[in-house]
Image: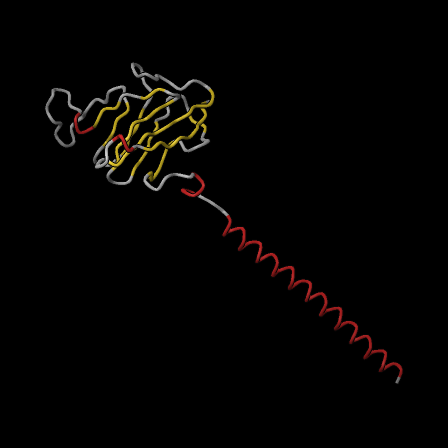
Length: 172
């Protein structure tokens, strides 16, 4: 009888140990899942991380990006906005793409048009861009940090009601 009661006690102890192990394992898994869910909810990516205003769909280079000396700057707006670019404190002259012609005439669709060494605003896509090049105010980006600003406004309200978005990028 003592052997049977010892076996019974051993089985109860093993069951208690297994139950405790399973309980600790379950708590660990549950805690891990809670932390993963919290991590996904707290993470900011894309537009949220960049802190872009609602009217700017995309900007390149993004804040903190490292780019080449001849990299193009692009700011893409939602419909109805116009802008000017300011790089390192210099407001770049802006040419509207719809006013750009080689002979004073409106360019035909598909025709090659030579872009001037200025910022170019495309009113059809609401994009302003600038490519450093010979003859431009900025022929290439010096090595180091640069500050980009875009002054933008709703076309119907005019430049007087403009706002500014500022970001920084680095050049190798």
